[in-house]
Length: 290
Length: 269
Image (cartoon, rainbow over all chains, first blue to last red; front, side, top):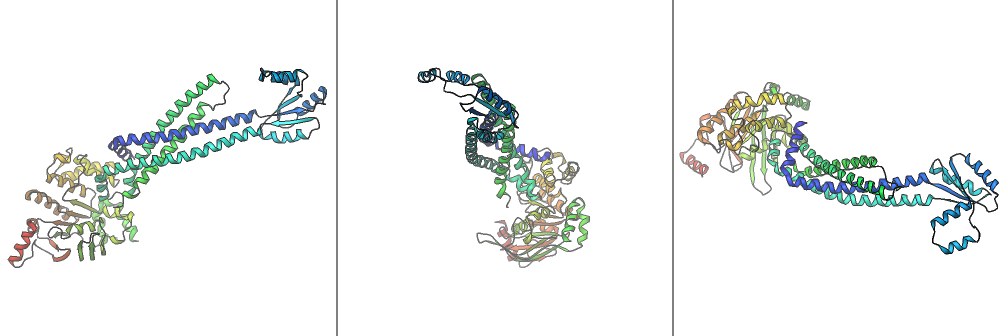
């Protein structure tokens, strides 16, 4: 095994600048892959965070007496799947509204004549999927006027994630071609530079795989070097974004740095090895036919 | 069955000369009506049939372009015949599968006029390379390479690079490389072509020593003096045809002086 690594290192030195060029190309491609990974992980993270926050909001019918409302909520607390129930009186709701739209005078005039809002409540479930059945039950209740929940936001976010992923695949496929091409060319140069050795190797009875191994390792090596550069760039960049975001919008739901680090290293590493291996296999496809 | 035996033979390459006895005195190189036509239409060999028994020392002579090199290349499967069949050891070369080529080559040692050493490795590593390539153990390599360098008289030169050596020394390195894996057959294509007569003599002495130790030697050559002095079997090829096969031959056909003189002139031209 030592022999193969030594020969692979020899090959990288032989091809010099071409190796540097292919490492850089690989790292650009893997950097883009890493950025897509970061984006999709974050979208997923945001969707999950929203899912966790997903609440169901409902309003009592205006005819309900406060005592009956409280009794209703007390009973609701014991329903299966319900985590938390918060009562929001119409006075509180009005305060909230004023806070949200402090400069809307028309609105002020309208609601100063008498609070048109309704008493309501927010329900948090233990799991997001428990929301739709709960909403159905509440809608059937004669005391409840209206039920609203955020399923639509979550499903939209999922759609965005899916579009991003598909776009990512297309861009990656193109980049992968470019990368394969340059790695294959680098390896081919190496093969050319060492054609005399290869001729002697064949002459004394080396097997095809014995001749191929150093070149395959060389390809893998180039791919891995690219992966190291790319993941370093992505991780450093993400650290920056993460800390900046923490200052600017404290509660923005960004995925944790360690999650990103691990997944970036994994995807770029696997991508680098794959592209290096495939590139060199592509280059070696024909040369041994002598 | 044949393949199983071949495997045993291959694994025990280190003691191959003894192992080889299991094949008896069978004919081990055989050409049957072999024709080699290159894509450009040139016919290098034309309907050649010959057999070479185990342990023989054979000269292949003839003018340049007569087909000597093509014959050697057919034997180590660098080329395949256009028609006819070539047998070497247990291999039928026309039907050789790709995976079997290394097995054939490990039975052969090949030397060329342009030695084909690796310029960026010293003498020791040029020879060791041939053993690394067939995945010999580092211990065997350490033991065997100096033995080979001693055999060819270059142990003092082992850390020199090819460009620091004379032509004769380079050829001896080539010979050491060809022999280091204990081949059954030694194929030499004009090994003395670039050498002065004395150096050439040394190379041929080595070849006959190797032959004496049991290897079959096939040497394509122009060197009339050597062929005449050695008094071994001579195959003469002209225009791709085998024109003469003498068990104890000379370079030129013994006959009218005029023919001899003419062929001599054409060889030297």
